[in-house]
Image (tube, rainbow, N blue to C red; front, side, top):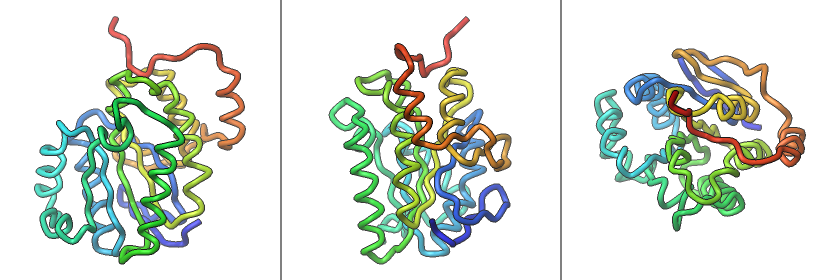
Length: 215
């Protein structure tokens, strides 16, 4: 586990690996996360953001509005804004093994390149498309906890509280050691050991809806 510190919501955290962040709006999301991205650029991290292609313009303009040197950071390769369609749901399907391998390649290449450590933000809205394999999202989230400690990284997954179901939120909490809520970061008492969680997940019958159902 990394000994480097990461500042999130004004709080300095050490050895942090895998965080979930709950937001009510994209405006709140970038207001909270822009300082996290800026610190990464300042300290020499590679900053990787994954979001739906349709959200890229808002993402980039929100970072620029927050004072981040988006153009120069992207030109140098230190900041990358990648489409969900080329990562999580490449070829229109979510495959846990493929995404784990892709993540590990990013982390290993950073270690070998000019940016020794990585901090990410994955906007998880893509999961609500209900594409093939999406039911395995929580398996992936748990497996990230087995992968991340091998690398110098901070991985953050952003979820819209208004759109994800209560069952999905409970599973997200079970698979992340820390949670950002209402602009503050909390140690998560609902976090489960990933091996234990994966065993429980294997016993679960049927799929659970990820999206909040309209009443």
